Length: 178
Image 1 (cartoon, rainbow, N blue to C red):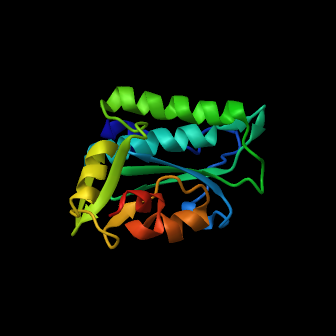
Image 2 (image 1 turned 90 degrees about the horizontal axis):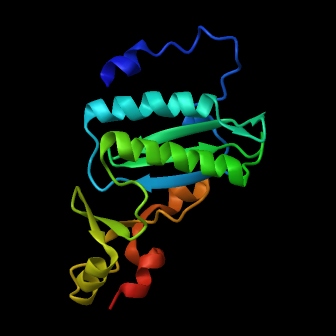
Image 3 (image 1 turned 90 degrees about the vertical axis):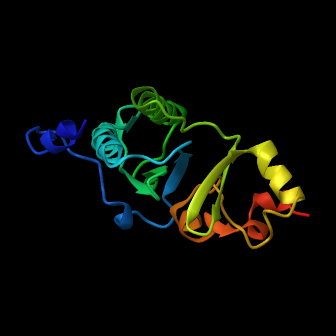
């Protein structure tokens, strides 16, 4: 896997590359958060990064290029992003990104698409549990208003940076608090 990453030479083709650094995307860039059911290994991070670069460089909307990026947080969250000031995404381009993520799931034997998994912090540890288990933790007050949760429903870069990793009482998770 790591050889693929290190052998990736993006300068030998004549096509325009649409990957841009995440930090250079505007605050209103659209994002999708994919949380893994387990932490990525270093080799997997390299593999995901290489695949994401290739995917984004070729990501289109009805033939028009999309300017996009990705980032990986806590070795467990893959965030895909697109600058809709450049070109808007369409259903087809979103479908292509979902297929890309599904391919990663299959190749790396992990789950990135299960929206019933809920993640929260316990000190420096990130825990991922099924929604019913999260609800029980809240009922038992093992999860409180101050527990840091990950709101994977955010959909802009700005919201990702300000409303993704927040106390439970500032997220949709609040409905389960006692």
